[in-house]
Structures are given as structure tokens and as C-alpha cells.
Amino acid sequence: MELLLMSLASLLAGFVDAIVGGGGLILVPALFAIFPNAAPASLFGLNKSASVWGTAMAAAQFSRRVHMNWSALLPAAIAGLAGGFTGAWAVTIVSGDFLRKLLPLVLLAVLAYTLARKDLGRHHRPALSASGERAATACIGLVLGFYDGFFGPGTGSFFVFLFVRWLGYDFLHASAAAKLLNTATNLSALTLFALKGHVWWHYALALAVANVAGSLLGTRLALRHGAAFVRIVFIAVVSALILKTGYDAFIR
Image (cartoon, rainbow, N blue to C red; front, side):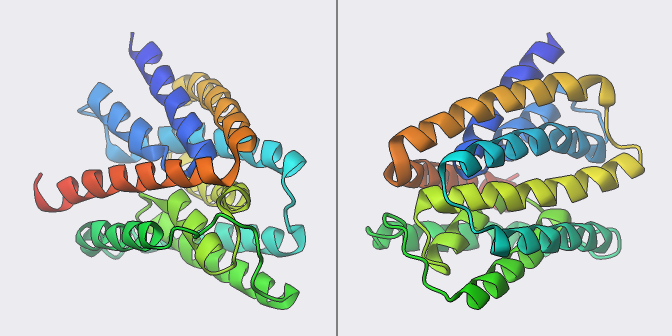
């Protein structure tokens, strides 16, 4: 029964993650509910062992149908790997508690800006030169990679928002690019958890298969319905993240 519940949560997480990020909002609380006495690091490691495959599959699916600027995104993915390792190292010596109260406020600002700009992310109009885009994507990869390793919630949604707001992508292209970078940050975190023995490999395969299945379905819907659909899901996921992180920071 435990494996079935985890697999269903992983499938739904992969579905949401493939469209706009935020799958951890589903799978991580499910794992904590199923294993209330487990070490948090083990549950985070299990989450990453599933999500890295879902995001990688989504990135591969998007790359076949959506133009991806590999000359900018591959260096950004490498920067994301470096940022993820650095963030994971930093959290071992510095507390991330201050981010717990800041995060819902930042997400609220992202949501308000997205709702206020009705045309935001509806049209794909890259705003930077080739060199400018390489520098911007590397910066995004490094900073959000560090954030993902250090704290984590909402990383995929932040990737999407920055690609839309800063680089001029539409939501569909932003989601495609985000999947590649999020795969890199997930991989760095998974590597660290694995080296420290925090991955339950006997569950990892089943959760990975379920996550990939959800990812394939989510990617198909995103490609079929386009940027407007991804924008709607983005607003829904960010709203849910605000409620969840706000509850964790100020109520629980």
C-alpha cells in the first residue's frame, strides 16, 4: 500500500513538474505523510531520485517539438550543477530558516506580477542578443541551482518565471528550458544525497517509473495546448506554493 500511494503521488508530481515545475509540492508532503518518522534527508533524496528522471524525460520530449537554444542552455545546465553542489554544501554550515518566511512573499510578488501582465509569456520574443542570452541563462542556472541545493521549493516555477520575464520567452519555451536546467539541479542534489547514503534505492525505481509516466502525459498536454495552457497551470501551481510555504512559515 505504501508503494502504491507513493507511486500515485510520484505520477501526479511528474505530471505537474513537466508542465511548469512544482512537483515537489505533491511528492514531498506525501512522503512525509507516509513515513512520518523518517529522516528528512532520506525523503528528499527519494524525491530527487524520482524527479530527476521525470524532468529529464520532459526535457527530451520538449526538445523534439520546441526550439531550444542549446548554445545558451548547456552552459546554464553546467552552471546549475555547480550551483546545486554549492548550495547543498552551504546548507550544511548555514541555516536556511530565513528563506522559509521570505519564500511565500517572493512567490506572492511573482503571482501578482504575472496576473497584472496579461500578455506576459504569451508570445515567444527572445529579448537578448546571443551573448546576452548565454550570460543570462548561466546566471539563472547558477543562482537557482544554488537555491535548489540550499532550500528548493518552487525552483522549477522560478526557472519558468525568469525565462519569461528576463529573456522574453513564452511559457511553453520557458517550461522546456526550465526542464533541462532543473534536471541538472536535481542531479547535483541526488548525487550529494546518494554519496551521503540518503537515497532509498529499493523504492527509487518504482517512483522513477511513475514520475516518468506522469511527465510524458504532462509534456503531451503542454505541447498540445501551448503557452496559454502552461500559463494557467503556472498560476495554479504558484498559488498552491504560496499557500503551502506560507502555512509552513507562519502557521505550523
